Each structure stands twice: as structure tokens, then as C-alpha cells.
Amino acid sequence: LKHKLRIQYSRAKLGHFTQVPPHQENTFTNNAFLTSYLTRFIPQEVRESIWSDLTRFGQRAVTDIYSLGRECELNQPYVRTFDAWGNRRDELVTCEAWKRLKGISAEEGLIALAYEGKYGEYDRLYQMVKLGIFSPSSGLYSCPLAMTDGAAKTGMVSTSPYLKKAYRHLTSRDPAEFWTSGQWMTEKRGGSDVSGGTETVALDQHDGSHFLYGYKWFSSATDSDMTLTLASIISEDQPEPKSLGLAMFYLETRRDDGQLNGIEIVKLKNKLGTRQLPTAELLLDGALAYQVSDEGRGIASIANMLTITRLHNSVSACAAMRRILLLARDYSLRRTAFGQTVESHVLHQLTASRMEIIVRGCEALTYHCVRLLGREEAGTATAQESLVLRTLTPIMKMFTAKMAMKVVSEGLECFGGQGYIEDTGLPVILRDAQVLPIWEGTSNIMSFDFLRAVMKTNGEAVTALYGDIKEKTDNVKSSKLGSELEKSCVSVMNALDKLINFLQTNPESIQPAARDIATSVAYIYIGALLLDHSAWEGNNISIEVAKRWCDQQLVQLTPNQYSFNNRSVVMEGYDPQETY
Ligand code: UCC
Ligand code: FAD
Image (cartoon, rainbow, N blue to C red; front, top):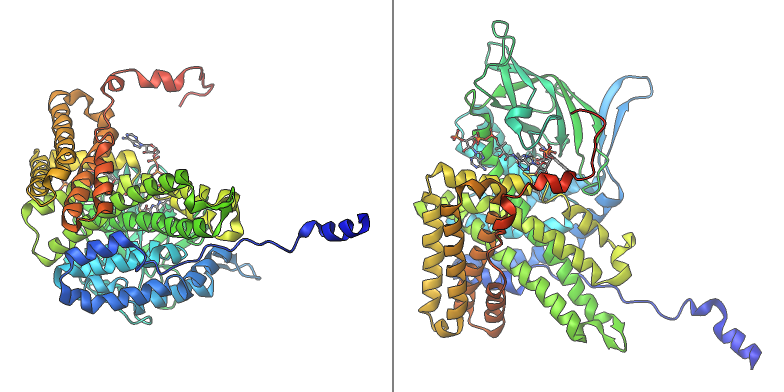
């Protein structure tokens, strides 16, 4: 018997059990909330035309595109600075999959769709839904596409012949013609305070062109064909930058002979995540560029780009959350613990349902903003809708990015230890999500951008937002589900009144409270959106989702903290030896 047992247990049963991995299902058709949302907001004739494309693409995103994206993670870009003979080359080497993703982006119309005018105000929604399908599989190719879209929008509204030419390339469906764009704003002194941090100068050539000299500290999509960037103008007569401020410039990254246009790739950044993406430090050493905004209007002009890229950020945040949820949901059916599948444990069900509700809230906010942008671009938006879009954009960017960190982290935990293992392809989702609150403006900067939009309109934006939320909750109250949802509608309106009362009575606290204010607006507005959607959809699940959202603390203000010397809490016990 002893001998038999030794044989039976030899090699510790290495080969008998293997865990079935999570299956990647069609990202589009498996998203119940988004498909319901689109059914509601896109007219049937448009839906009939686009649905099969989205369904096909949803499948592609978990098959060939996923493989290409994974290859980008495994074969990261690098720079060959010198050749064997000591000649400076600055050759950026990207893998074949990265290049193929550029072609696919053109063929699938991932930028073009928004500009072709085929479906009017629904063009933007169609494009962003497709980008959301692409994003979590794209090996971060979604990043250059965001900046490309921002540049295309800037080109669309500009009269500059340079930007008009670029626009044709940026919106092309032909891979041979398609261009991507960078957005070089950040310098060493600061990426938040761009006006205060930009040292790049543009030497006037007096022939309509300038040579740029400066150091761009973070430049993603270093392989882009063109970029929009900022600099102060100087000339022989005016060798120091004038106080007028920055102008926006257009430059093509390569000359006609294929050489870099006065640009040196000093190094690629060694990053926590987004490693698929070539983010570089660039020295501009006489880069030929063309001025495409008035002097002093650089920030205001590049802001056209920011609205679009911040939307992309939120679409990607939602897509990352949705991806991990779909995977976790599938895995919970395949994994057993304590004699039951994970999905059948009631505590797991509650944990996962909380994640689902956050994702629905973020999707509701993001695709609402996308819809408003589509209406604005098609000329069908009301003045109130445009104001709401301007004020919600930074809130959406801030909130969805923060929620992505929370949900993706929880999502990894749903896989237990496997969520921490690189070969599963799961940890990259968390590493890549961590950039979402940082780039395109940090959370504090987004909170101030909300305040900027409010101040700039002398409170008109607040009136628009108030009217919008009130209209939504009033409609819900007078709907068939009015009595069922009444309490939640009251919670939303009470929260809104409390927030507005705080803004009116505590002007001195608005700076330190900016983040809490922005977060409160997100909770309140999403509450109104989910109620509005549940009144339309009318099923138990959407009602539960909306009610639970509104049951939370919607106002996130902490008034007793705003006047305290918070610096003293942070600095206690710290005695720096150096003077800064
Ligand atoms: O991070 C980057 C690329 C990452 C890769 C892309 C990924 C996309 C997602 C992909 C997903 C996978 S590019 C770098 C991004 N950098 C930023 O976002 C900068 C963050 N800092 C800010 O946003 C600051 O708030 C600044 C730079 C705008 C503050 O500058 P100023 O000079 O202090 O701003 P002012 O003076 O308040 O505003 C100047 C003008 C004003 O217009 P006028 O003069 O007409 O009143 C503002 O109203 O700019 C206008 N403006 C805006 N307009 C400022 N912000 C906005 C805005 N958001 N929308 C419209
Ligand atoms: P800082 O401005 O130094 O901020 C440091 C901290 O101070 C932050 O927490 C910020 O919120 C806080 N802070 C600043 N001002 C205030 C204030 N007034 N009140 C309260 N808090 C404040 N940039 C580009 O231009 N092009 C790119 O392609 C690009 N790609 C990037 C890729 C990656 C992977 C990363 C990580 C960054 C990239 N960036 C790019 C730069 C990015 O946009 C900036 O890092 C970001 O905007 C923050 O700027 P900063 O790093 O200078 O931080």
C-alpha cells in the first residue's frame, strides 16, 4: 500500500487540475447598459445601419485586435539613438502590431466616423462607442487616436491652410494617407500650469514660418505625423518672449526627405504603465512650425483639442472598467471556492453588483457628454446643452478616471492571486488605468476647470445645470414609475440645493472645496441620468441601479475641513534641510 500511495501522490499531482481561464466575450453585445442606452437614443434607421458594424467590431476587439494589442505590450517601443558608425539616428522602433493598429484605425474609420456627416448628431456617438470597443484591446493605440481626433476637431474649426491639409489626413480611411497627431503641451516646469511652464520659443522667420527651440517633457505618440504645440514668439527685434503669452503651432514631425524636423528624441520615458506607447522627451532644435493661433490665444486654441481628448479619456476609463467586469463576471462562473462557483456566493454578488453600478454611472455620464457633443457639432444643441457640456466635461474626466482606479483594482481582486499575475494579461489593465487621472489634466486641475467654466459664464452654467437636472427629475416624477422613483428624485434635488446653497454662502471655501464640489456634481448629475434612464427602461434592474445610486451620499462636501490649516497636517514632523 505504501508503495501504491507513493506512486499515486508522486509529483504532487502536477497535471490534474488546471483552471479554465476567463473567456473574452463580444464587448459590445455583452454590455447590457450601453446597448439599452443606444437603443433609446439612436433612431431605429440609424441603429439598423450601425449595429452590425458595432457587433462585428465587438468580436474583432476580443480576437485579432486583442492579439495585436497584447503584442504591443510584449514588444515595447525603443529608440536607436545612434547607428553603428556613431551617426545620430533617433530611430523610434515600434512593433509590427503597433503599425498594423494604425492601419486598422484608418480602415475602421475610428476618427473618420465623427467627421463624415453620415448620421448627423449620431456620428459622434457611433464613433465613441466604436472607440470604447477598441480601447481596452488596442495596446494603447487609443492614445494617439485621442490626440488625432483632438487635432482633427481643431482643424475642422480652423481657417489655417496647414490645419485644413492636416484635417484631410487625420480623417482619412486610407491607411496610406492616414496621419496621427501629437499634442505637446507639457514642459519640465509644469504640465498643469502650461502658461507658467512653457519655455519653448518660436523664432519668427518672417515668411509665415517659425523655428521652435525648447524641450517637450512628455510627448506621447512620438511616432505621430504631426503635432500641435505651444511656444512664445521671439524675433531679432524682440529676443525675449513678450508678455502677450503663448501661440499655438502646427508642425510636421518629418521633413520631405524623411528626416526628423529639427527634433531629437532624447529618451523614451520608463513608465509604470502605458508601456506600449512611445512617450518621449523631445528636444526641439529648430523645428519648422507654423503659427495657427493668434499670439496669446495658444491655450484657448489648444483647449478645442482638450475637450475631445478628455472625452476619449472617459471613454477609455469606462471601457477599462467594463473589460475587467466582463472578464470577472465570466471567471466567476468558472472558478469554484468552498464547493460553489464564485458567482453563487452572495457576498461576491453584492461586491460585483456595486462595481457594475459604478460603471453604469460612468457610462451614463460619458455617453451623455458624447451625445451632447454630437448635437453641438451637428448644430442641433441648445445653448443650455452647450453650457452643460462645457461644465460636465472636466467633471466627467475627473470622476470616470478616479472610478476606473477603484473598479479596476477591485476587478483584479475578483481573480484572487491570478489578478496579480502578468501572464494573465490582467495587471496591465490596472497599470494603464493609473494614467487616466494624471494626463489630460489631473483631478485637481479638472476641478478648477469646472469652476473656470462656471465663473466664465457668470453663473449661467450653474443655472443651465440646475434646469437640466430639475427637468430630468420632474420628468421622472411624472412618468409611469413616478411614485416608485419619487424618493430618489427628491434626494437628487435636495443634494443639488445643498450644494448650491454652499456655493452661495461659502465663497471663501470654494478653492479648497473644488474637488468635493466637482465630485458632488458628478454624483448628483449621474443620479439624474440613471433615474431618467430607468424611467424609460422600466425594468427592475435599472430601477434598482438608479435607486442605489441615489441612496449614496450625493453631496461630498466636508465644510469643517476647508478652513483648517491642512498644511500643518501634511507637514508635521517634516524638517527639510534644503530651502526650496
Ligand atoms: O496629457 C496629454 C496627452 C496624453 C495623451 C492623450 C490621452 C487621451 C486619452 C486616451 C485614453 C487612452 S496632453 C497635456 C494635457 N495637458 C493638460 O490638460 C493641461 C492641464 N492644465 C489645464 O488644463 C489648465 O487649466 C490650463 C493649462 C488650461 C490653465 O492655463 P491658464 O493659462 O491658467 O488658463 P486660463 O487663463 O484660465 O485660460 C486661458 C483660456 C481662457 O479663454 P479666454 O481667454 O477666452 O477666457 C479659458 O477660458 O483658455 C480657455 N480654456 C478653456 N476653454 C481653458 N481651459 C479650457 C477648457 N477646458 N475648455 C475651453
Ligand atoms: P504638476 O503640474 O507638477 O502637478 C503636480 C501635482 O500638483 C498634481 O497632483 C496636481 O494636481 C497638483 N496641482 C498643480 N496645481 C495645483 C493647484 N493649483 N491646486 C491644487 N493642486 C495642484 N503631456 C503632453 O503635453 N503631451 C503628451 O503626449 C503627454 N503624454 C503623457 C503620457 C504619460 C504616460 C504621462 C504620465 C503624462 C503625459 N503628459 C503629456 C503629461 C501630463 O499631461 C502631465 O503630467 C499632467 O498634465 C500633469 O502635469 P505635471 O506632470 O507637470 O504635474
